[in-house]
Image 1: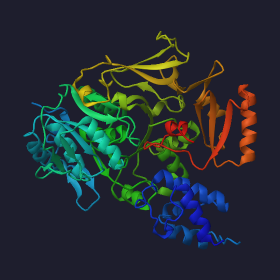
Image 2: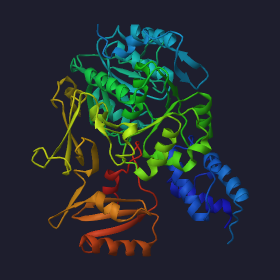
Image 3: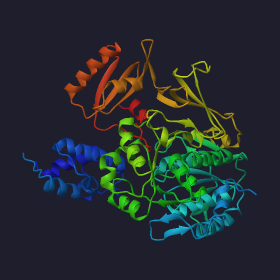
Image 4: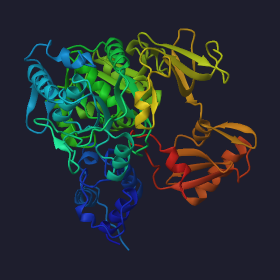
Length: 82
Length: 473
C-alpha cells in the first residue's frame, strides 16, 4: 500500500467522506467537514497511525491532502510497504 | 426611542478615529466613527419596516455586524442563525418562525423577497398580520446551533445589556483591549466577546480563520491582539502548540468558557499570563443567561483553580436539593442562578415570541455543583446526566471519568443500560475496559457496554453530541 492510500483511508474515516471521494481535492475549510475540530482529530489519527509526533508548524501546515502527503512522506520519512 | 440595546447609540459617543473592528477581507480597520455611520445608515433603512423578526445568518464579517447593530438599533428582533446550518434545517426554522427579514452576507433571497438598499438583508413580500413580538424581546439565540433544533432562547434587551456590563466589570475590559473575534458570532460566547469589547470602546479582530491555520496566528500577532478567548478545545490547542512557540507577547488576557477545562492544563496558561502581568479567567455561562453566570477572578485562580468563580454583579447562586430546598456550602446539588440576565424563556414557535417573561429571573442550570464557604462555585456534573439502571442512579460523567484520562469516552443511557463509546479502542481493549468498569459500578456486562468509535460526534460548540450518540445504530 502506498502512503497516499493509507492517508486517503485516514482522511475518509476521520472526515466521514464517501469512499470514492477524490482525496486530492481535500482542503481545510473548502472541504465542508474539515473544520478545526476535525483537523485536530486528523492530527491525532496521523500521529497514532504512523507513531509520530507532529511539530507545531506541521500541525498548522497540513491544510490539504497533498500537504499531508508531502509532510508525512518527506519530513517524517514515512514510507508504507505492502 | 425604539433602540433596544444602548450599543448602537453608544458607538457614536466613542472617539470617532478609534479602531473598532478589523475586516480581514481588505477593508482593514473600521473606526468607531465609520462603524457608527454605517450602523446609522442601516438602521435608517430598517426602521422604515414595522418591528420584525429578523433571521441573521451571522458570519464573522463587518457587514454582518453592521446588520446586527442596525437591526437592534431599528428595534427589530434578530434571531442569530449558524450560516453553516444545512439549508433544509434553516428552511424548517424559517417555516416555523416566519421571520419578516432575512439578513447576512450569506443570505440568498427567496423568490419575491425585496432587497433592502445598502445592507445585506431582504424583506418578506407577505407581511399579513404576523403574530406579535413581546416588547421586552431583544434577541433570539439557538439552543443547539448544529442540529437545527427549533428551540430558541428568548433574551430581553435588558438582560443582554446588563450581562454585557457585568462582564466588562468582571474582566475589567477597557478601550485598550483588543479581542480576537474567531468564535462564531451566533454562539453566545462569541457574541459576548464582540459586544463587551464594543461597549467598552475596545476593538475586535474579526476573522473566519481558526487556530489550526498559521494565517490566524499571523493575524493575532500583526493585528495587535491583547485578548484571546476560547473553549476547552481552543485552550487545549494553544497548550499543544505552546504559548511561547506561538510568540504572542501582546496577549495579556485569556478567557476560557464553554465547558470544563482541567486545572492541570489551565495552570501553565494562568502562569504565563501572570508572569507577564496579564490575567487568565475561567468563566461559566449558558446561552439562557445572556450568557455569563460566573467568573473566577484571575488572582483567585491559584487558590481556587477547580472553581468557575463567583456570580457576576447582580447575580446570585443557590445550590438546591431535588425538591428545590437550598443546601449549605460544600453540599452538592443542582446549581440555581438568580439575576437580571436570565432569559425570558424558551420559544418553539412564532407565537411564543409574544410571551413575556416566564422565568422570574431564576434559571435552573441543570448543572450539579457546590459552593465553598467563600461563595466560589465548583461544578461537578450535569443534573440530568444520571442514568437509572436497575433502580440505581448512576452519574454518567463519573462513568466517563472512571474510564481514565488516556481515552476519550462518552457515556449515554439507552434501553436501560449504559453505553460507553470509546474513541479508537481495539476490541480487546474495549472488553478489558468493559469488565473493569462493570466491576467498579457493580453492573453486569450487559447493563454496561463499551463500544469503539472512530471519533465522538461533537456539536457546533465542540461538546460531545450526546443526542446523536443516543441515536446511533
